[in-house]
View 1 (tube, rainbow, N blue to C red):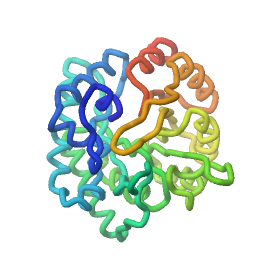
View 2 (tube, rainbow, N blue to C red):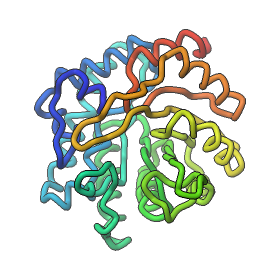
View 3 (cartoon, rainbow, N blue to C red):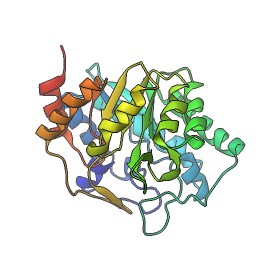
View 4 (cartoon, helix red, strand yellow):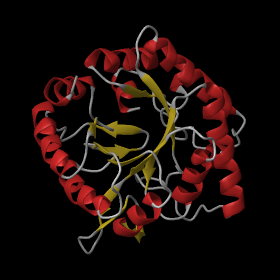
Length: 283
């Protein structure tokens, strides 16, 4: 999403990068192609922001499946002639609190309502032909569980991505969820037994500790792809972007903490994947 913005597609205050699939498909496709050229083994369709919770709130729920179908098609077009996999992204994104980068936690749905929305989203990604589903920015033990269980019910491989930040006490908590310790999030979601667990959209400076905590609850494959900068709705602010060489140095440390899959989240770009590919990719 942030790379789509960087290339000139306007972001929406309501739906962030979701509508770029419809309004700027050439940019979306070009982003995918550049990551493939950089050496990526997996690209993620631009479906993170088509959160069914968010789209239901703004009266556009029927648009989720339509936009996701376009997003996956663009990714598939970019992978033509390659062995690169296409992941569908699922989030629990809610309406944003005005003037912040936080979800509006006062907006809540019942478990039954939320599960139905997540299942429809997951089924739509499966119908589009995604190779796997990536749960991104999972930051709690309620919505993240319901969404992840919906994805797992499709039978597709599911990768669960946890996002952490430091709370007021200095301990790691879920991103924007000071009521959920990162340790409890990791324990709860690892118990769902996905194909891969990930630490993503987390500061490189906090990823080390997050991986160490995750490893106490999970013995399977681990991925790491951090963010840099910050969100100021509707745009990403590209500040303190980690240099590619520094990301490689960090990734080597994350290898010792159990990670074997690497990439970049918001604020990073293809140059980061070029460096990771050159230094860490095995034949």
